[in-house]
Structures are given as structure tokens and as C-alpha cells.
Length: 146
Image 1: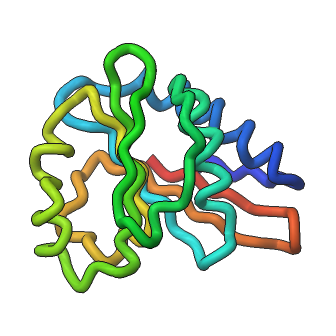
Image 2: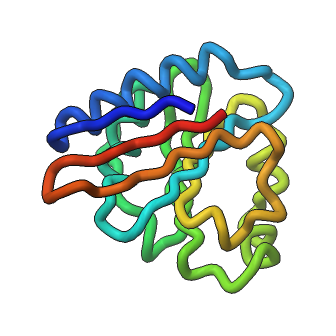
């Protein structure tokens, strides 16, 4: 497990940039890269996702998917980034209805999944887990487990 402490929005985003590039380099090419983002509301998940997307070459403004559940972005190299929020899903079946199996089976896709505990049974064994823990208003402890 790798633990990083960031002290500002900019540092959290910069860590997202770095990690997206590092993880994509180690992608096995068999299925989508799935990254589970865990932490309470306001813990830095969307801020991290903005940096993560930037590191993948996403040019669009990355917004929280809380109300739309899934946002899709074009990334560099014919890749697609899916930013999903499972908070409002009732169970794993709801995720399946959003074409989860098709999305996760495409090795050119990268998936950032917020509130993964709601759909735990559908996550691949290779899922990277990132826990966000707020320390104070701007400081975050970010723990990466792969």
C-alpha cells in the first residue's frame, strides 16, 4: 500500500495525474483498468479524478457524476475514461443495466468508480482501491492499494 498526504487541491490533482500515468503503464490489456475511489462526501474523490483525467489526456472539464451516475470522456490514444458514482444505485443489478459488462471488458477503458461498496460483487479482482481520508479543510491522506 502506498500512502500520500496532499495539502491542497492542486497537490491532490497532481497526484491524480501521476497515478493515472503510472497505472496505465502497468495495465495488463485483458480488461478495463478499474479504480475504486472510497471516502466520504467531500474527501477529495472528484478533485483526484480531475487530475487523473488530465494525466490521461482528457481535455473536457471533469465534473462529479453524482446526479448522472456515469460520465464518459475521450482520453488520448483511443482510450475512454468512465467516471461512475454508485451512491444512488440500489444494488449491483443497477450497474449491470448501465452496460457495466461491456465497459469493463474493453481493455482501452479506464473506470473511476465512486462508492464501490454498493457494487462490490461486480468489481474485478484487479481493481485498484484508493481510500481518501480528510485530515482538515485542505489536507487529504490518500491510500492506494493494488
